[in-house]
Length: 447
Image (cartoon, rainbow, N blue to C red; front, side, top):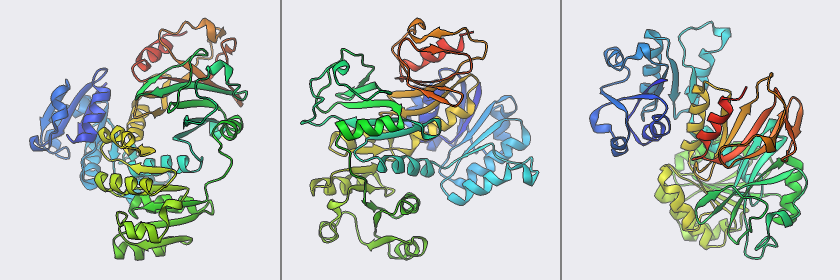
């Protein structure tokens, strides 16, 4: 496909690096905005403003399949997408930072408004970030949580503690509940696909897939997850902090928000009904002690500044907080945060990238989620109706991967090697990101 990206920033370089090997990529922006990462990529570059018709023509907009606008300006992204749509048949994807744009632009596409002047897909990364943090908060001790098949199946990631009964055990001897399976392990920052002979080590991050109720049993038995999250503190009352608090209020939790700006605190108090608003700095040790922040079940730092999030997170972790989640803007910082002791570091850009990949996919394969900063992928494969029934063990996959879930119409199956794959099935497969292209190619060729 021919893809045009407007914006030469870190986000666009991340998008381009994921797409350029299989697509023809052209980037539009002023030369002084171009980040160094583009020097390593085989992409075209057109200097100028992506909302300018002549610049769009120079980038061959009329022969393009997809136009992605991801500059730092919402308004510029919107105008560029609408202009591209007006002069071509290109599919448009627009990044925004303001909530009102996400929903007003979505309405324009609604058939009720009979509008042919719209943007195909609007991505609000802060919404995706909020959704991910919310999922993780609601499952105590989990490092990552993903829902599949309308919530009937899930992916959960846990860290194996020093005193865990799983330490030094072979997977096949662990007696995990029925309808659960380990699909991945991260050890010393490396993700790999295990087998029954794999021995679990202290500090391993283990990724499970399975039926939701079976994973609940597993969590209680092996990770002492028997108590619900009751107390949550959010540091940072911006868009993410506010939206997260609104979602958590529905769960009747004890909530606190620490926000430095007085005017913003007043706004938060009007928007939230059952959240304690604390006007102060999340790096103020005296304040953190006075408000007993470290006793919270979860502390979430979601300011707009990576350095401040890191400092806040380290402070509350040092004070004894059991579980700390930190927002990270630069994806390159995620591993740094976790290396220095932050339990969970999350970047909105990974989820946004998955949104793009699924919006431009041309095959029967989609990406449901990525884990461990993109080192692992959860793929969904739509098996053709005329597929000749075959057992999983007979597939002869070209690389290591695990079929974790099969969705067969209304049934959810956690398979084993003898389970048959039938026409019309949706396979949910876990593999490493480096092996994902081989898995995709394998299933694209099945008949």
